[in-house]
Every structure is written in C-alpha cells, then in structure tokens.
Length: 159
Ligand code: SME
Image 1: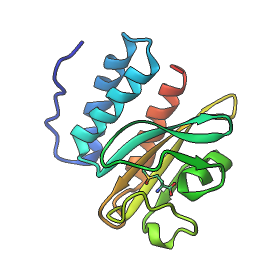
Image 2 (image 1 turned 90 degrees about the vertical axis):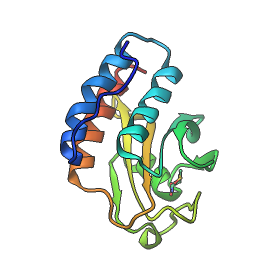
Image 3 (image 1 turned 60 degrees about the horizontal axis):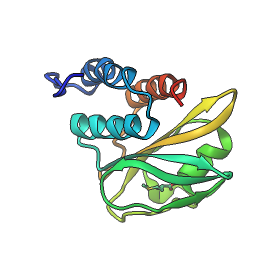
C-alpha cells in the first residue's frame, strides 16, 4: 500500500486524475468496507481540503452517517429530506450551488454553502450517498460531478 498520497497538480481536474488511481490502489487490497470508505474520505479531504466529505449509508430505508472527515454531522437523514435524502429518493446526483436556495436543505453546519451529493447504486438501489460540502458558494461543477460519479460507481462494486 502507498503510505503517502502523491498530489502535485494545481488544477482540480488534474488532481482528480492523480488521486483516483491512488484511491483505487488503496481500496483494492482491502475488503473491509468501513476501512475503505474511511480512507476514501481522508484521501479526498487531503487532496481538495473539502470542508466536509463523507458517506451516508442506507440502513432500514434511511441514511445513517458513515465514515467522514470534517465537523460533526447529522446522524440520520430520512428519505426525501435535505439534499442527501433527495438523492436517496431520486437516485440522481445533486449539485447545489447555494444550499440556502435548496428547499429543505439540512444545515449540519451553518458554514456549509454549497454541496454535491452522489448516489452509490447497485441494481438501481441506493447503497449509500457521498456528500461533499464547501464553505464557499458555487464551489462544485461538472468536473466534480464527473469524477465523483465515476469514483462512486467504482466503489459501489466493492460494497
Ligand atoms: N446538508 C446535507 C446534510 C448532511 S451534512 O451537510 C454533512 C443535506 O441537506 O442532506
């Protein structure tokens, strides 16, 4: 296993290109899901310095907080509630440039300003969602969407 992440790029797009193969290498040798998801959140936090990055896991038809990096967060989110619950319900990625403009957004931290939530799917069922929050408005775009969606699709096969 690589002991340290190697990130030399400046742009977000290049950082994703560098980090995703390293994340895959890190996860491929380990079967424990929680260990793997914990390392994925740490790698993303270390690379992009996201304000908050973590997984919510589907348990008994609601979302339960899983491995994350950042300030403490809401433990449970019901289907349809907030951005995460919306993604759980719709099974589609949500890119939210201004969380205050999203009806029903759940403010785990008042510092969070924009957010992207990506579902992890298998057989069209949501297994978990990846939630990434920024303390800046409009901080996520199609580069994040493309790369995080590809990463989550790959991770779904490891559940
Ligand atoms: N803002 C999310 C809740 C999770 S926290 O941001 C970590 C939502 O509206 O679903």
